[in-house]
Length: 412
Image (cartoon, rainbow, N blue to C red; front, side):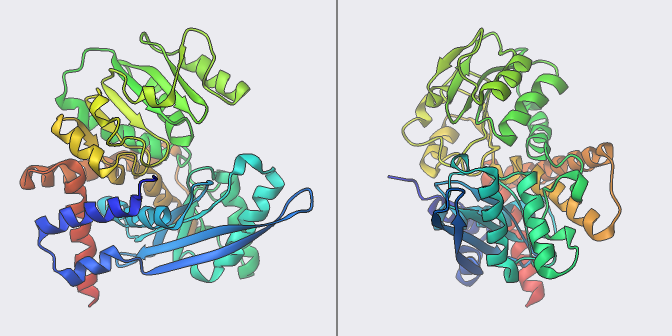
């Protein structure tokens, strides 16, 4: 039975709301998305067949600013998943103190089964379907699972075509050549690493620090590169993708791994590393575990087998509620997704402001601002964790909920 991420999200909300003692009416506002958009996406395939795909855009809360959230193309996309993701975006933007609310979108489709032409068709069709409900001052989409800068370029172009004018700020995560921000492609991973470096200062790990990374999409692959090339004293001992996992206790040859993945499309079956089942990676005896794939990876069934001391959630919702209770009892430090992977939306915010102003920043300036925002957010969360004697996730929710409710009250 599939775990319901939205129910997990609401349970997390209620845990924090009890500590804050917010009233039932305020809680109901946070529990209920402001708007749910269901659309049908027609696709004329390359062989002439017509398929009707399900698409969603859920707008959770805009008390602090326009809705903001990614669009994912994945066969598992459904209403509960997108509702949970939109809720987490509201929390995430508030934790980082960005002037946004939260939203999320998706199409239930496997893009690996589509040609580039078919992906462009559904990208443009999605924009036409939700055009009246998105825009630079209403709801600003961005990339997510199995979407990328090229797809954002198609979507931004389609929005401008329908609008009859150039509107670069309608989407973020675009290629730099069409208004994207430098640093956006690595922002999710880099933001998480900035927080990780602060969090592990209290640990006395033996060098080199061992890391296992589950998921080798944008966040996972970039985290692998950043830790290997930009920081000393880390060794990547295991990585996985949708096809399998590889492990080398002495450390994986990361440059070779990257070229192997590019050539073969998989991380498995390469020199000096043994293949593992993907679920086995989660249970390795490592210092740091980075789940960077889909939600619900760590469950009640495998939580007791987790040996890592620190978990950095680059994926959204990778730990179920039941699993988290077990991990916290084991005194494992969980750096929650609403903080850990917020680098992406933070640099999306930088991109949005650059698009609106027409003034563009260089890579060094972006990284300096990202580092500052992530470290400030971590300190804010850590301070509340100390005050309320709670875990980092609960502290992040307390921080975010306080900021959202304050905005709602000020607006009346």
